[in-house]
Length: 352
Image (cartoon, rainbow, N blue to C red; front, side, top):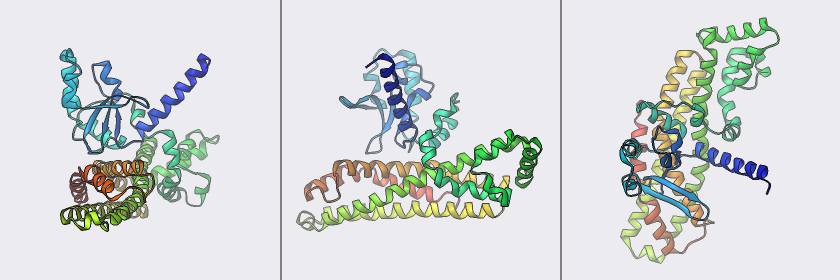
């Protein structure tokens, strides 16, 4: 392969990998952290299926994934010195972060007073934003229609509003933008920042809702798979195992119902906002949604990790004998489930 072609292939692979990390709930590239040791900046944080935070020192298709707990790192960097000690202190602060989605990570970095020079590193990938375009129309069209009414058909999205700054007719552009500023109760110069905040907060809602909608059907399939297990001779003869499975079923059902209810609450709040759109009410909605980012991200991270692992191990919902199903559920689904349930319970209490 010519060097240029090889470089292009490598670039595409790297770009795909970067997008994967940006759009993930369980991966965090450590290059965005102010670490001192180059070797650590090349690593990444991952959540394993037991929801532990691990430092992944290497990963590839051949060698697999080399993961260690943060507390085990000194054994890999015996000559690390002061730089390593400082990095270790920082990394330990991420041990209890429930999710590495870009929105939860921003909150964590802000709390740690860590500035992010490249804010683009903490945005969803362009491909993911495009994928969520249809979902975003639910949030963008009410704003556009509220401001422009019958004229809204000429503006498709929030970028279209920003494009009015470049309108060939300066008078028309200025009139439209003033109309928007007056409607929102903000200064004309604040429109770009308002639109950025507006788009970002509702993109986060669309992102999490998309994950939930894709995960819930898998949970239902898993529960049906587990119901078959409970009918097996292996479980029917062991009340303790049946009680364990019954608790897992009840917990997954409760967690799913609770987080779905939270999104229904978000829908009601945003619908109320759209009946009278203004900057103050948007601030209230933004604070509400932001307050839920970490718990929603953590719950979805835990559920998706477990369900994706189940789908990968058992390629179809009819696979696996009773003993295999029982062992998988006991070793892979049960660990951390109480943590997810407790996180959802705390999240559901926010703003009540």
